[in-house]
Each structure stands twice: as C-alpha cells, then as structure tokens.
Length: 189
Image (cartoon, rainbow, N blue to C red; front, top):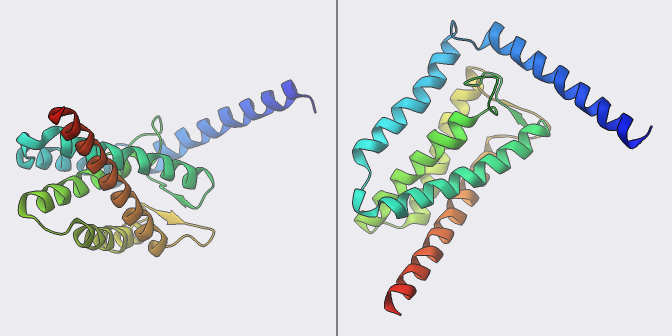
C-alpha cells in the first residue's frame, strides 16, 4: 500500500470513527441524559467555587499551577485514552476530546485550591497533594467507574491513576516554584 493510500484509509477510518462517536453521544450522553448534566455541573460548579475562593493576590501563581496540571493531564490522558487504557464513555460533547471536564476543570481546580491552602497556611504540599490524589483517584475514580463515567482497560486501574495524579501535581508544583524563583531572581536584579 502506498503512502497516499494508507493516509486515505486512515482519513476514512477517522471520519467513520467520528460519526460513530457522534451517534453514540446523541444516543447515550446527550442533553436528555443525566451524564450530560453531571458533566455540565462538573464544569460550572468548580469554576464558580474557584471564582469565589481563589486568592486574588496570588492569582497568577495559582493559575499557573492549575494550567500546568491541566496541560500535563490533558496530554497524559489523551495518550492513555487513545491507547484505550481508559475511556470516558460519556463526555461533555462529542466535538471536544473526552474527559475534558475532568482534566481541564475538576482536577486542576481541586489541586489549585489544595495548592492555595498549602501556601496560605504553610502546610506541606507533598502530603496534601498525596491525600488529594488518594481522594481523587480512589473516591472520584471509584464513583466514575461505578456509574460508567470511566472505563479502564489493559491493566489500568485506580492505583495507576493515583500515581499519575501525584506525579502531575508534583511536577506542576516544581514548575511553579521554578517560575517563582525566576521571577524573584529577576525582581532582585
């Protein structure tokens, strides 16, 4: 098979897959299902909470931390999801990638608020992040598995999700501290 033929076949398969995803979403995840409204709530409620409780004096720092978590989890989640290690069968919409409400909103905001708590009250971030990852992976993860918001395959389990949450939160913390160090170094210069 030539390069062009193979590319055309991939294109056709992706187009067919998108049609199937759209059909599935309309039949089982659309506006008339509780999944849709849960996904909407999991975007709106955390954003409202964040709006009212974020420390506006440290807005850039906290948002940078959350954005780093978002970028890391979106990339890791997309890779694992495309390899079918885990799948979100009921997404917010069929147009955007699955799991966006979790990786772009719920998880980052949860960890942003934990980060803010640790920085404001001088708590050990590593301990709090591990506790947060435990609650998120085993608490929310178990709930998601039980109600079919998440499916895991190929040996993926909640323990792996816990370790990914810990790794992502630690890396985001280190990046944030690095950028704060650069900012403080520049301010002294």
